[in-house]
Structure formats: C-alpha cells, structure tokens
Length: 371
Image 1 (tube, rainbow, N blue to C red):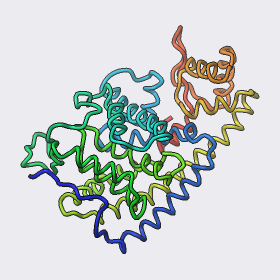
Image 2 (image 1 turned 90 degrees about the vertical axis):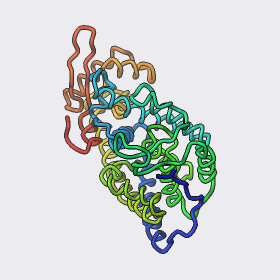
Image 3 (image 1 turned 30 degrees about the horizontal axis):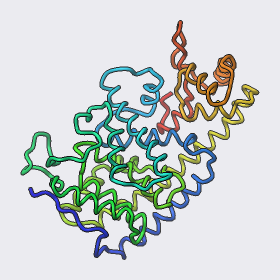
Image 4 (image 1 turned 180 degrees about the vertical axis):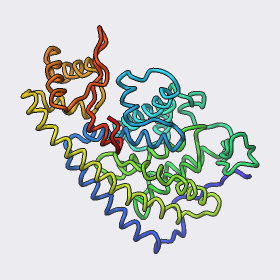
C-alpha cells in the first residue's frame, strides 16, 4: 500500500446542500451549550468532572481501561501500582494536557510546537514514553493488524520526508477561516489523524484539539466541549468515516458524521452541565446548613475540583489558598460526613490521613452509581 497523500486545504467541491443544514443544527446546539457555560461562575472548578470523564473516554477509545472514580482514587493515593495504575497515569496525563492547553490558549494560537508539547505531556512516564514524546515521527508507520507488514496495512500515513510540509499546510489552515468553523473543526481533526504525525497518541491529541480549536475560533467561551463520549459510543462509525476519506476521498460523509456528533454531544453535555450546576447550588446551601462556616463555599469548590481526596490534602489546600486554620478543617469534614455530604472511603490510621469522597458528584461524572 502506498503512503497517503493528503488533500489540499481548504477542501474543494464539498456537497454544501448536504452539509449546510447539518452545520446550522450543530451551530445552534453548540451555541445553547456555550450559553450554559457562560452562566457558570467558575467553569474550571465546577466542570472538572467533565474534564476527567473526557480523559477517561478518549483514552478508552485507544484501549485504556479505567473509570472516573478509579482515576480520582489514584490521585488520592488509593491506587499505587499494577496495570490499572499505568492506565490511570495515561488518563491523568490526558487531563493534564487539557489543563495546560487551556492556559496556553489564553494568550497564543495553536501552533505545531504547542501540539508537540501536548504530546510530550500526554506520553510522559507511560507506556508510550519510548515513542519519542514531543517529536514528530521520522520513520514510516502504518495501521493494521498486529504484526502486519506495510503491504498488509489498512492505512499508511504520509511518508516522513513529506510530513513537515503537510503539517505546515495544516497549521496554515488552522489560521484561516473556512466556510464555517464547525465544518473546519471536522477537517482539522480528520486531517491531523490522517497525517498521523506521532508514533503513538495521535487519536488522543486529535481529540484534544477539537475543543481547543473551537475555543481559538471563539465558538466557545471555555475550551470545554468534549466529544469522546459520542465517538466511543460510535467507535466503528468513527473509524469507518475516517478511513473512507483516505480510501475514497469521502470528506462529505466524515463531515456529516462529525456535525451529527456535535448535535448529539452538545445536548448530552448540556444536560450534564445543568445537573452539575444544580448539584453545586444544592450543596452550597447544604454545606452552609451543616457547618455554619464562613468557608463553606471554599470547601465546596475544593470538593468539586477533587471529589476524592485525603483529608490532609484538603486541609493544606484550604490553609494555603484561603487562610483557613488547619485545626478548623477536621470539624468541617466531620459535620459534612454527619450530614451525608461526604463519605469515608478509607479511615485514617496513625499518620495516614482519612480518604473521603463526594459520592454524588462522582456518580454524576461516571453516569452511574459507583459510590
């Protein structure tokens, strides 16, 4: 099989009669979702569970097996070794890449150097660390059954000698304005996947770029629109439409699939955001009632951003960020446990602090009752 030669961007001869009605639906759905985002006072804190869920689902598409609550437990020190730990570390890296990208994009546009840095974060200290983290590939790679030759491959990306030119053309396309920003996002994602510029991690980087590009285009007020739930639930169709671009030049089928994904996922994300916002408001009152503390909102923000935690970590955070005396926190935690807001996962013993969780938020992020 010959290496793929990517189409020139912007694409010519798209079927706009097919695509423009879908573009309209997708824009309307995304605008409704962003309206919710704009009404949230601290989206990075309140929507932290959505970021964790995205990291879990995007990694799951690539075969990583871990759940939201397992990731949160590992971060609280409850999972410390074994294959599960390695899976969770990959997911934590994905989330870290999303967080660092959010800060970068406040001041700078997406550039190839930025994409390489995302990859370096993603592949740090995990199973792909021998796959040249942060560097575009210098070798020919291909996709197919394990152990297959290049001739037996289902897809062969562009050869590494031409890759730099194709990547620069892709970067220029990022800076341009196509017919519509959602149509352009579909092309940006697919072209990146077809270039397959890294030895490993291309799918995850490509999916991270979706909310980042929408944020850069000012289609989102925060880079927090996550599509991996839909792509995981429709994995076969996802790969089918990507492959159809290289096999048949079927960009229309891919873009239509992507726009339908935006419509469905925007509605799902909106429901989840409203549920999280409702829980936040409910807990604001419940914690104040249980503790009668002037620090109740600070405690609420802390358990929203990290709903499974060691008591010592929360004490240190409140002391460092808000000047709460370290002797105050144990009483607050006790009152919240008695009120049923927090649950103890592991009792403190000797010098080991207790591990606590905020079960309603974990269950909401997981989409099922796990705690």
